[in-house]
Image 1: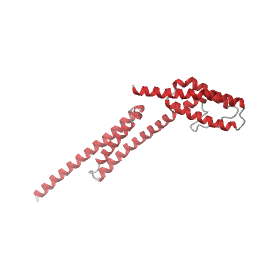
Image 2: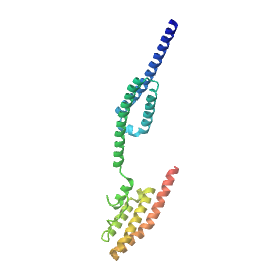
Image 3: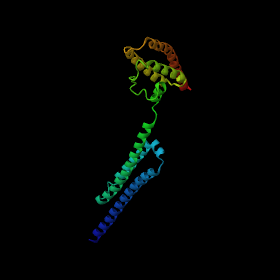
Image 4: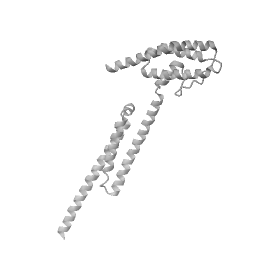
Length: 222
């Protein structure tokens, strides 16, 4: 009887020791998770945005480790520990939302290179992503071509290969609009002036575009 009680006592001590070590391990994992999230709240926002993918990976790993450490705990301890994890995850989610919001604002505020090019060639806000020239009519189409051609000449040395591709699309869209405007009473004098601009622009554009491609190809090889 005494031997049985002794064995039972020893077994109980062993079990208590195991439970204690498991709880200690779980507490350590949870503490690491909490410390990590707290450190993020003190970090520089711009640095976090630049390294968010790595931050998210590290958080997921630490969170998974913390949750896995609860498996061997008794229900009461597991419940209390899970609440700590959930509270830390909530803090992280709040921080993540803040980062995503700031990133969206930063992206929306960043100038669109294509839009900057359109504004440079036709005037601010005149042309959007749809490249609609609906505002061009028989009274202002010559001025539109003149503005475009002069702006092109002033900036042609600074255009990239992608810029030339975009310019080609804009020019074709303007020409398409001209076909419509011709039927709406475009004067022969304006039509003749536009033809003169087109005659100058075509060969110039072709040569400049080839030059830009050759230049970028040479730079890529360096």
